[in-house]
Length: 342
Ligand SMILES: Nc1nc2c(ncn2[C@@H]2O[C@H](COP(=O)(O)OP(=O)(O)OP(=O)(O)O)[C@@H](O)[C@H]2O)c(=O)[nH]1
Image: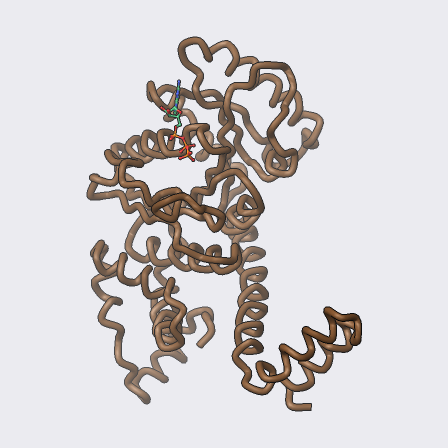
């Protein structure tokens, strides 16, 4: 069953007619039970068909209780200090009374433990907090698959009462775009660079960022960090029109010393004020529509690959395409013809 917007009147009528059984995870998750939340995330991560149906039903029921968090994406190259930063940032938010969830996207990880958050020593202090929920990246082969499950996990943490949802991704590859497509604000952590150039940082990633934070602004690196920050600011001035609703800011911080962390949260507040509720809602609407088409694509492909007759034909058609006996477009049309029963 696809995710659909909640229509209380119709739902109530349907509910009394068919008496759908409420998922046992529904009530405890809404009450903020961590085990129920963890189990619900495991459910949405499952690829089993029956689990998928249950996950869709649970998500649909929870949908009216989602959307109330500040959705932040954080990226940066390995070693820039993401986990040190997120831990400090998360602790700062918890101290201010927030409930924080950290989710990760890392489909590329071949590291032992499987994911960037798999290592138990990461964010140890934060993970011990009652108001923090940290979830490692699910194992996945495709970015699309991992992103889909992270999006759903974000809805679940929101339903469980987390009012700040942080999606972390390692700054290599395409995952930054996937994260930028599911959050309200995208934060790029940068290392202090030695020279006055922006080498090593992909321009595309800088363009996605709403806030640039040069980390490690301490000790010997303090001056280099300041210099990098002004270089980035100059570069951004060339990228963005001054009249835009939000001109990305550049800040420095020291995650290790805990300096500049509160200022990052202040910048989040300014960003949200500049966008306004309508701006955030618009961005989320565009994201939801893109997500719908993603879902259609993924679901169609999965159905296509499962189709028995398609499966039977596929090897021969692939062989014909490989040997040049058949044009890929013609083979694709035949496969789709079979799938659609034409
Ligand atoms: N001087 C200084 N070092 C820092 C700071 N933040 C992190 N580091 C150090 O940078 C190294 C990497 O920090 P992590 O937080 O593990 O970085 P990460 O980006 O999560 O790294 P990956 O797990 O490889 O993705 C560690 O040795 C940290 O102690 C900082 O503010 N100042």
